[in-house]
Length: 173
Image (cartoon, rainbow, N blue to C red):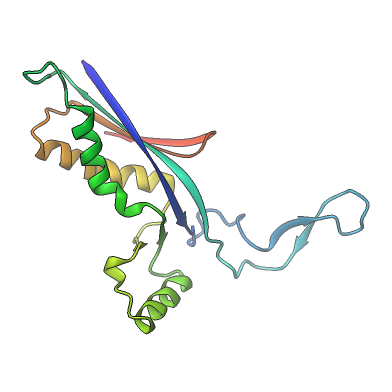
């Protein structure tokens, strides 16, 4: 069995709006309220400000197969990178929101007012919360189809989405 692996780094902003992580909110701020060096929670009440934040996602595509081509390769790394970049480059410096996020409508209205075509922007509106887990699963299916279309005999595929150097998710079937 051969495993071929490559990766891409993608700076992406996202907003986990639907309760994915209620702790990430403007209301969850700790401050030194008494100036005594002890930090206390500064409660602003219920979260009304969805926080857009970003990561430099490190996406690793790992493909397993038993077959090599006439050159003794699973796939040329240059070709594999081309396939990956053809899809993932659209996410470079993008933002991912959900339809129910109040910021989504604000961006759409702003785009209309300024003559910006939403389909040519780097704003993505996903039905699912843009978690690393969902990214890994979505991108697994896209990459599997792309490698299959190239005629690769894919035994298995894994997509790893690393949000930080300490936190990553891998999806495979």
